[in-house]
Length: 152
Ligand SMILES: [Fe+2]
Image (cartoon, rainbow, N blue to C red; front, top):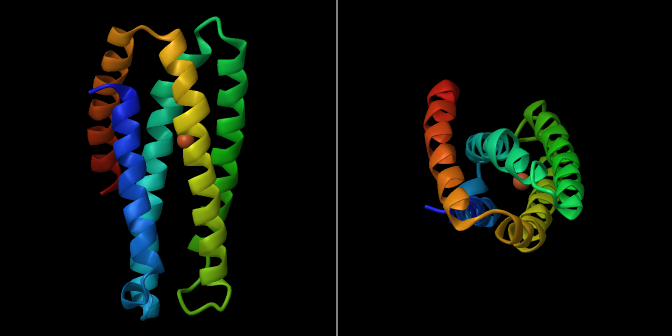
């Protein structure tokens, strides 16, 4: 599977979790909220780790300056998302700011996903041959298995 397809599937799974969080039935209880947050956090962390370890370096080693710029922007966005995750981690599902911070997190992640799927994927398709995109997809699938085992 091409790396772009794999990441897009991941993004879609994350969007599903966000929609689930927005449904009151799943977030009625503080524990329900925190459980869903934990699931969202795990998905985000595994996903960003795979990008930072495999996808982004592949893009920065091409001759594209635009690619390198976009990667550094994306890494900055990852850091900002990680900071929000840490803040949410320290909160209880009952905290009155929990949901508000969750919305900030979801908005930031959604914006980041859009940027990645348009600008970064474009750059990847322009600068990496088809076989390389396939190869990176395989590498990422393997890496995910390892990261998920470690996170369990
Ligand atoms: Fe990303």
